[in-house]
Structures are given as structure tokens and as C-alpha cells.
Image (cartoon, rainbow, N blue to C red):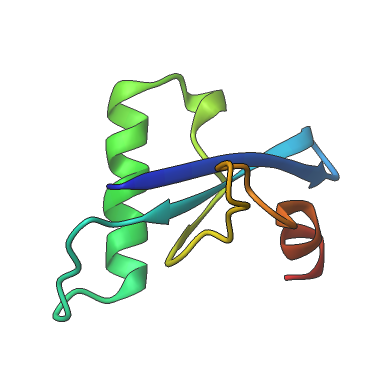
Length: 80
């Protein structure tokens, strides 16, 4: 992974859920996003507490400002 951004979003049961945006260094064209997401969740589950595992993981790009902060992440999470 080259970049990861983790943000909270409103969740009806937990109060706040976890949404992770992941940018890969190298992409494998043969692996679909669903399989990759499952693998990333399994990796998280084996290394961190269950309550800290992201509910959603999106693999792709992150829109950054020039100083590195994630731009419009709340809008993306709430709309999508």
C-alpha cells in the first residue's frame, strides 16, 4: 500500500463506523476489488481489535490537497 486514509461515518447501531480508502503501490489486474477487500479485512482482523476493523474498504485513489490532507472525504462517504 502506498496510501491509506481512514475516516468515520455515521452508523445507526455503533454511532460511528470506519471507512478506509486504500491506494496500492502495485496493482494486479487479475484480482478483483471484492477479493482484495476481503483480504485486506482479514489482514486487519488478524492484526488489530475487531472494533477497529473498517466496515468498508475502497481500493482506488485518494483526492489529496497539495499538503497531503484528504479532500472531501466526508462528502464521498455520506453520498456513496
